[in-house]
Length: 258
Image (cartoon, rainbow, N blue to C red; front, side, top):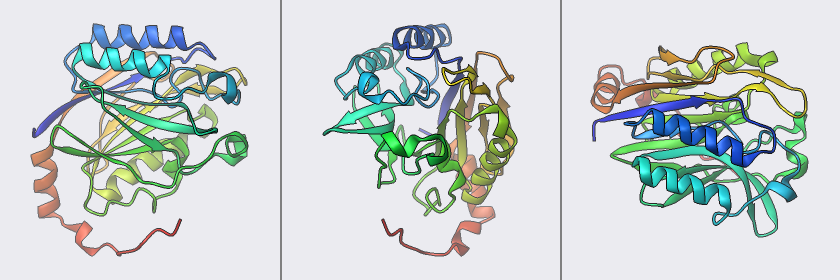
């Protein structure tokens, strides 16, 4: 499938209220049908919480079960992160849920220690690239954006997804880094950030956007607004551009030591 319609859903995540957040997401998706992929913010069901023991879920939990059903009905993949509980540990895990019910899981590598994330979460060690409708999609979460080596395109993906809870106070950094990652990796990039104020009184103003392989913004959400943005991406255009300007051929080869 050469063309893929993608949507990013920028919402005001209600603090520690999974039921309300999933209801809002369901309404956005069912009111805006037709996309192949819907992207949600980081910790879309709870906000960026520390209370992981109360709100952590495994892959059979209520949040995943409900999102799987929304994916099945809408016939679209859904991507976003939750607090994943696994073998006594908690991860900030980005889930890519396909309409057939299958799930790929990326456990956030770079934990935001400045905000205490490293005190309650375990970090992941594996890059995860999803195959979906002929596209190769790498999954990333928020703070990963600051670490270009982890997201380096080794000619193994066509699109990057960044799900985020990126605060308003550092928004200018967010905007710059998103474009930089798209440019240096010659890949489409889909970003989803939240708006509003969380339970820690941290403010967010959005900046959700979809960027092309040259770093040009295709579409961006309105600041401080709950909004869904959508566009159709073209794989053939990306492949042609990389043939015409094969910068990736000059990249260094390296191995990440975990």
